[in-house]
Image (tube, rainbow, N blue to C red; front, side, top):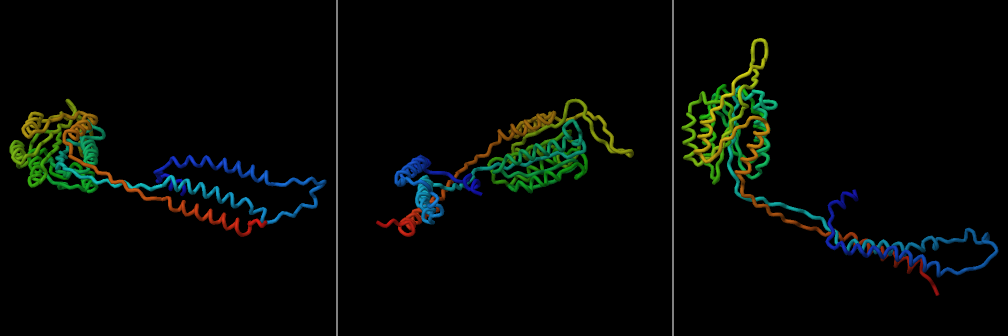
Length: 334
């Protein structure tokens, strides 16, 4: 308990601890003084004096002990022990970000660890946790699109919704235009000066009611910057396929419409990235995190609470006890 208390204590005037060097000097002086004050009597035997000690002799060192303890308490009080409380006030201009995630069946391909879907979710979760002042939302798409979470600053709720994302929640396919349009619509009425979409897909547009180029023009009109990520290795990737006999791994060609994704990114002021493994995907999100920095101002208010009062009180009580002993039971009469 004492150790825990000390861990949270700061001393404003620690130089006063140098006064503790007086303690051994006072002890030496008291021993020397007491020895010099004792009379010497030469006797042939001390048998007659055995058992003649009094309780006053037992109490005689107490005033000096009380004085030493009072000195120690006074030194600690002069060092001014304090507890410190730091309060941080965070203010600034955040960014509104919509994560637009492809959840089509091909996202279960295992060219990433453990697969594309889980790798994308893990990196997105880390990205969310590193953006404390931003509003972030989540749109998912495959053959159609759906807002999984609107713009929010509630990190726990957003991360919970992200963890619930899995392939099969929507009709299968890759509706890039619908996913982008839904994300843009969520940002349309945003008061933020900076609006960003991070669109991740592993395929080519093959469905949906909105053409990707139309969604791109809407994004440009609203003033949304789009970062696009093509996810998948080069060549072929192992994909789990459900058959009557169970799930088998089948190699399928990786087809990403990089031309479309590059066009969307370039015309909206963003950038296109290609993620071929877990490490490159993490680096992409890190680069986007660096590019889209929020303006954050952190003000730290530090308050101190004085803790020397108990030590000063203890010193006063110990000195009072010393005086009481010297002027009562240990009083010397002429």
